[in-house]
Amino acid sequence: MSKEDTSAEMALADDGKMTPINEKDWDPEVEKRLVRKLDILLVPFTSLMLLLAFIDRVNLANATVLQPNTPDSFNNSLGLVGNQFNWATAIFAAGMFVLDIPSNFMVKKFSARVWLSRIMVTWGIVVVAEAFVTNFTGIMVARFFLGVAEAGLLPGVVFYFSFWYLPEERAGRLAIFYSMQPFGGGWSGLLAIAIDHMNGVAGLKSWQWLFILEGIPAIILGVVAYFALLEFPHSPSTYLTEEERQIAIRRMPPAAPKSTDETFDWVAFRRDATNPLTYFFFFAYFFAAMPAASGTTFIPTVIRGLGYTSSVQINLLSIPFNWFAFLGAIINGLHSDFTRERYWHIVFPLSIATFSSLITGIGSLRPNDIPTVVRFLFATFTAAEAWSFPVIWAYRANSVAGSTSSALGSAVVLLGNALAYFVGPFLFPSWDAPNYTPGLWTWFASNCMALIMITAVSFEIRRQKLEVEKPLGVLWRTAPSAPPSKV
Image 1 (cartoon, helix red, strand yellow):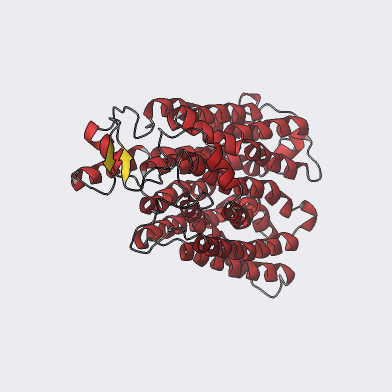
Image 2 (cartoon, rainbow, N blue to C red):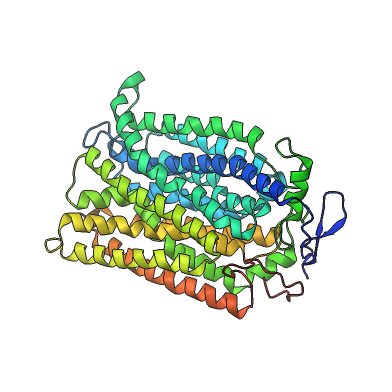
């Protein structure tokens, strides 16, 4: 047994005494008050962090449509040619891929308050520095270190929520958190349009102002986060009463991570590193995320290929794509928690995205036979795959036990996200314009593979007899004597 395994019937309270985990001797109204406080203290703040992170992540795409076809454009200012822009976009993900897993263990070691604050401040500094690069080498270095700085934000918040929220409470809250990505995508284009009017102010070009004005808020919020975020249930807090804090500790299931666990347990690490479920989740998320990762940067390019040419048109027409993902992710995540079901809440949106990407691919082959508005609508509907992302996070978080497994589990799933962001930018090279047929058919193939892999996840969970989801029942694993090969 791992050192992190605990009795399924007992939990360690703050006073060091073992108390029955299933014996709810606390006031349910106080527990409800605690959850409401957590919803106020954790969800909005972490969501704002992701909103700023996503705006900073995709501002490279917005920069390219500012001052188009002029010497002041981003590409002309840096002298980018061929697929150099694609490399500048992709290299960001390489930094994330390298440090996502180590960063997640730092959340446990230093606390979310310290580590998430560090992430924000350093990525904000790098984004501001991007404004002063002068060539391809400079933007490559800056984007790589942006990925290094931001590594661990997404898996770190998933891990962080696992300390505070019950398994059946996570998907909806993670969906609200995740929804800030498409929400930011919907508004970042409008922000770019406004900043385009600043071209020449103080001798700076509009793309430079874009990086400066979008990097500074991250630095400010990072400083605020250091003083505002909760740490762990076992940590002293000025925001929670002592009764609320004890309930926060005792209400969590035995499999939940705890700040009293070892930061890194080799037994749990080796067990999970050799568990096929770890890799099924990784590939499921990689294939699901790849269309979204490329769409994040290249949906303006796809829209341009439909015949829309002005930067205002392109940025405005990018909004429905992002808002479709934003609203659907929240509704799907909340409904997943309400029904206490995960698998079908992943399969349903992926099926919508698969069919939509099929129609979009056919439209790229026969652009004159399918009206432009129909092609645009189905391109928008491909964003449905994003509805599944927070449910996949919750699905994975519910299938692991202890801090090491929780940290590794959420990080490996989101390594799939980093890999998707590395591969995605190369799906739409400039020489495939205007229809981008290979990239759009890759979307279809990727969604099909995501459906296959998430089904493999479901079968493997059943094979290992893990009680990850039980509609209208307990969602977490409760077997106290599961062998080491089981997660």
